[in-house]
Image (tube, rainbow, N blue to C red; front, side, top):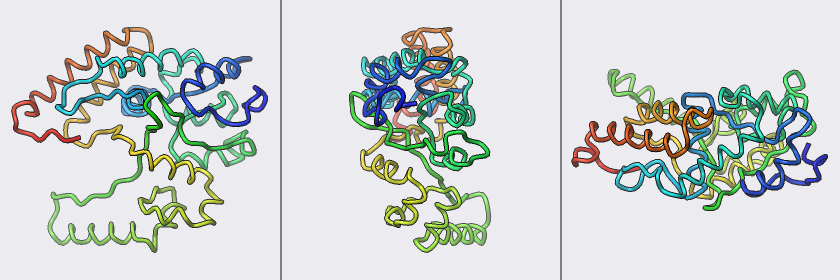
Length: 280
């Protein structure tokens, strides 16, 4: 689709995507891009947060106050709405599987997705684009390349006896060891060992590795903040982020609602009275 539209590579920036690429790729029932945006964590992280950081915005500032009224945050969220013109109808109800399938069936030219879906796109049984698939780093925003990155987390629960804690810790050491790293990637995981991605056979088999490793070098932010109140905040963002996209609310109105509810939640949790540390 890119070659037919006169392009020999994907866009380097989000601005290029919407200005140069999207108008030429959106025609004849096909679309330039699909953004997984279904209400839930998909909306709050994969969709909403993705368009804050690359524009220089953020959900919270250093004092854990809501930062959505910042012009940079507003610009990123407004950009997301403009980009919807070049996405399939009903995009607000697309989860990961719908976005991946839209690419696999040739309905859209580009998606931003997790490496775990690579096997779906390269399987002739599920994909029509096996021989036309290429992967590149996520586009840059005005504040640089700050893509949504994630992986797999393993932890030891405190709610079991010491014997089971010890067993869990030994398992984590084993499964994340250098000896198991390549097999871990082969089985669909994302190893945190960068030495793993120097394996030439692995890189040849999984072309998403070079752009993934390149993206790691950017000092990317936490799209899913690691503190206890995040699930509550995620629900708030998912509700009003969806309303932004389906036209029930303007970006400004929805941002104000998110800020009010987020700050109420964090206030009750003790973040503004010194009971909890302010650390993102």
